Amino acid sequence: MTFRDDRPLCLYCNGGLEKRGERWFCGECYSKLIPAQELRDLINEVSPDDWRELDQRLMPSPRARRMCPLCKTEMTTWSIYDVPVDHCDAHGVWIDRTGDTTIILANEQMFKSRNSGTPRGAFVPLGIGIIFGALLSPWLDRRRLRKDIERTSPPKKRR
Ligand SMILES: [Zn+2]
Ligand SMILES: [Zn+2]
Image (tube, rainbow, N blue to C red; front, side, top):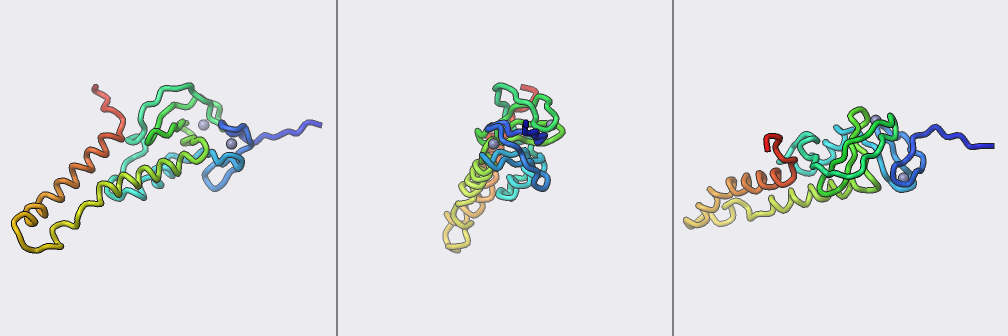
């Protein structure tokens, strides 16, 4: 007797995927297919100063294409924080194993490192240096944020 299983299969370990809410999840290796908006929100949640649509975080990552476990169409290949992700227009983003955690932690780390500066001039009220620092600090923060966004956004199309 053959065991017939119509469940979509994990692209990483070939185990059966289970539907959990809006996600398809592999209980064997923790890979998942997650709606793009859901991943977008999870990432943006840890970087309140850097809210971006998911496609603004998708870096080109040429590699072998895989088929969407649900609709079997070829997915496009990207990476976010060097974590490979595959994207199906209809079903969202495939992430091997716990890559989503890696992405979220990397984004959180970047948020923390650009926001770990000294408190803005409030701690020493006197001295021209401090006043100067207080004036510059928002500018430096914006500059840091701009650089981080530049570094983690896909290249502009016109180039
Ligand atoms: Zn799996
Ligand atoms: Zn699909």
